[in-house]
Image (cartoon, rainbow, N blue to C red; front, side, top):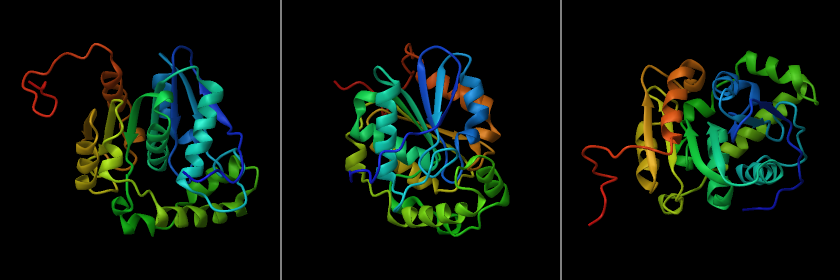
Length: 251
């Protein structure tokens, strides 16, 4: 992983009390995009949702944005705010960042919830990357950014370049992730389900949830169902399944 060009103190939302649960927002937005799922987990957890560099209230820096630098920022954030491994959720670009954090610092992540992301360049759909940015995202950025509305065009261009360069993980990389991972997507999500299945199959302790009648906005569209799926994933007392194949005990 390349060194971060500059340490960034991440602004963040904090809600609830209890064990820690950190959540990483999609690209081009900020932690407020996670509000529906944050609210549902704040009843049981102390939820932290940082704004990544150049997003929301966290300042941009000179130079490019990369998934690697954002992962380093997140690792530093977790080191500052956690005392041991805890659940980590990443959504879209945040899922890529969370995946890199789990690879680099598994001591910080007990469970990974990977929502609507990709693990390699092959997963990005060209029509999504080339799409125009909705005006509501520009308005949301202007509401809180320390740089003002005009800087959003700079952020968008940095994100386009970032998406053209990564992520570049392989199934062999994914096979080294030993913690439980829930791969969660909408059935009409941006990336091809074939890519998601490849990701799931490469993870030694992967679980898969495809949410019906949901798009790339799955956490916002179906927050109650997603909460229930994530709660089930996190439970420590999972029962044995009746006829396991992938998780069948070795003899």
